[in-house]
Length: 96
Image 1 (cartoon, helix red, strand yellow):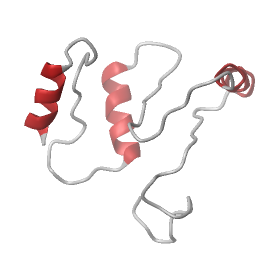
Image 2 (cartoon, helix red, strand yellow; image 1 turned 60 degrees about the vertical axis):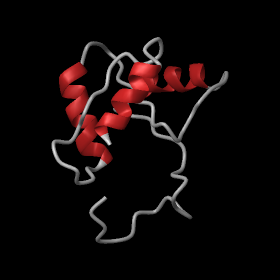
Image 3 (cartoon, rainbow, N blue to C red; image 1 turned 90 degrees about the vertical axis):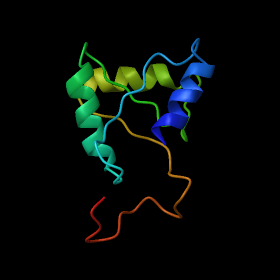
Image 4 (cartoon, rainbow, N blue to C red; image 1 turned 180 degrees about the vertical axis):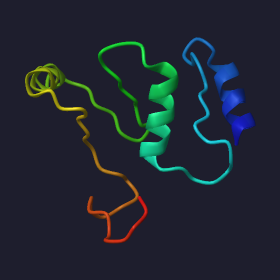
């Protein structure tokens, strides 16, 4: 899979800045684990954002969201729904 991603990055060098591998194995890693690795390697400011390729946010609602984050001091704001599931509730006992 990595080679296919590298080929895509080469083809679109004007859009791909970096490929960051958050897993040393082919096993699927949890989002939390990957986010921790990326943040530890690239923590360079007051805000941290990761764009998930299947969720896109765009519009005037983003400014008020940032304002709420600044006022409340929360650690994260998450939104969207996974396209692979019927609901957003993790079943009891699930490792995710």
